[in-house]
Image 1 (cartoon, rainbow, N blue to C red):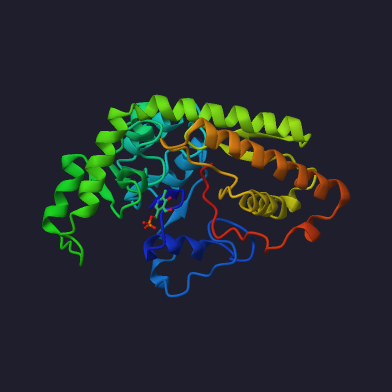
Image 2 (image 1 turned 180 degrees about the vertical axis):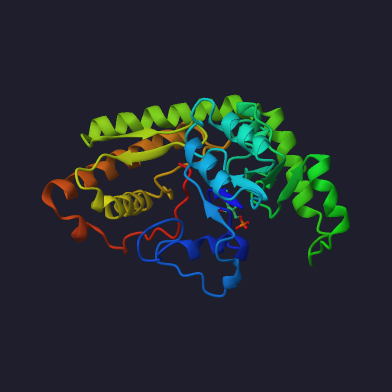
Length: 303
Ligand SMILES: Cc1ncc(COP(=O)(O)O)c(C=O)c1O
């Protein structure tokens, strides 16, 4: 399996860490060893870099006849580079490999039909969850009839397989996303949030910007010294929380975000940015932090 993205904590995926030095900060789980993951899985999962078609081709060539599938997050906070996902699709076809899009995070947001609908590239299989059920536990694996039909001959079971709550939550969520024209609303809300946060950056005199897709904008503070990133991002989260805004530097817009929420967020950000600016200018970031710097548990590969 060739992978690009975060795909959870199952053994098949965690085995990717056998290919990396856990202390090097390399993909995918810096500082985390694959404890308990059978080491016969070593070498069965190979990560590739997002946007690099030449690397994907090289890996497919090097492992010709051995690759069952390419699994990837099609996008997160940025639109895929033009032609990239089409290129991945062509490579999958050329090497007779199944293409799986993990739209667990990206699904339902940019378009109700996911990144694949927005970009016009159809994978053989898709995994969706999260926004599909608006907080209720629910996931779905869907795909072409040809790719899914072996499931009928497999043993698939679960303690909660007959639970209906997630199904009802999903159907209701999908209906409401369409009824409320979520695609347009997300664009409007995300755009307004980005504009307000960019104004907060300018007013606070802190170099940086709110970037990214309207469904997943993110705050990026410009730093002369990249090693300060963890502390600065933690200080941002801390100072926002102090002002009753609980958020990471990366934001998911939702349909309940109001203009007032955006205004309050921008005001809190303005104040937080001033604290950060003072911390950077005086070299006192450590004194300003009352919490431990955020640890990065895994690298996502896809921005
Ligand atoms: C893209 C993506 N795939 C898979 C997962 C894993 O989902 P779960 O923890 O439900 O297995 C996540 C969770 O954050 C995710 O963001």
